[in-house]
Length: 262
Ligand SMILES: [Zn+2]
Image 1 (cartoon, rainbow, N blue to C red):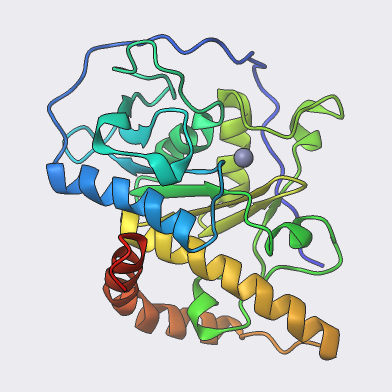
Image 2: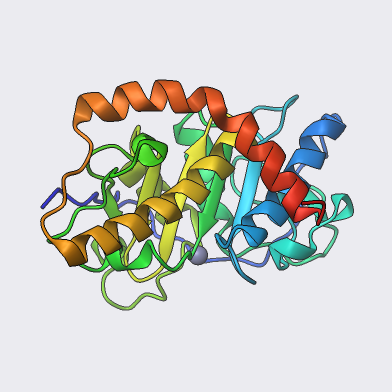
């Protein structure tokens, strides 16, 4: 069994109604926004998100800010639905439109990890069991899932706010604790809730979210057959280097599929 992450215990806060703070920065690159929109569609089409879940990308001209859709089902997101957020997780230009309750997942990971350019949070079904069974670590068992490493951390919300919680990351304190649990990793599981994957681009984050789900399915199936031989630590590192160069190939196909062209 591997060690679960623990959150910080400072400064409780309460989820507040989203009110625009600050002024919008320079317009983000149109291609970045377009990729974010298609990322939403891909994640739905590939079974990572349903009506819930979200994807964000760091603002290309204001690295202290990020972009994410307003509160809505990912499959329906258009460019007009993209909102800019500050590093406190609050919107800059929502103009009264509801925003995701769990936006603090994104804001606090972006704050803690300058290398992270995109974040995907989902409740994808195959991953969920590994957040529940503490004796079975979630680890890479396929080369495509090598970025997961030999033991993904599991976030335990009770360690942060005790038993009286709704399992959601609805404030900065919880977001910070989740970011601490993720550490320098690529994927963090959240008990009874879902998982969060990060990447150095929106394409890589989507790639990792999709293959986290696939790796979970393979690991579950293999576990029915007998003891599982996962990737070694060296294999996870080497395979990740190779697979990272293949992200565009998957993205291009997923994009066409999300657009109904293949
Ligand atoms: Zn969630």
